Image (cartoon, rainbow, N blue to C red; front, side):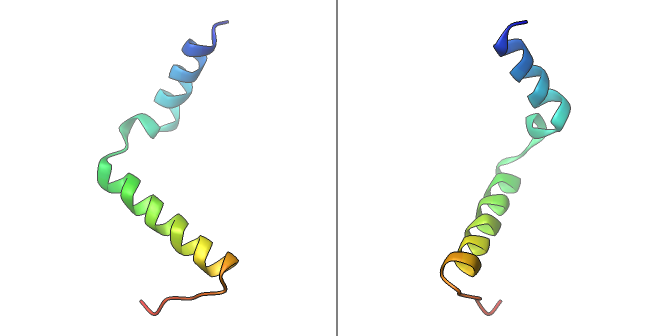
Length: 46
């Protein structure tokens, strides 16, 4: 088994292959807000 084939198969079957730029940005924003809530004890008023 080669590693590149396995990783390529993982990306295709999990749906990561179909992410758009907007979805990636929203995931990063949500992870940042979760970080603020946990590490900095900050809850932004949305």
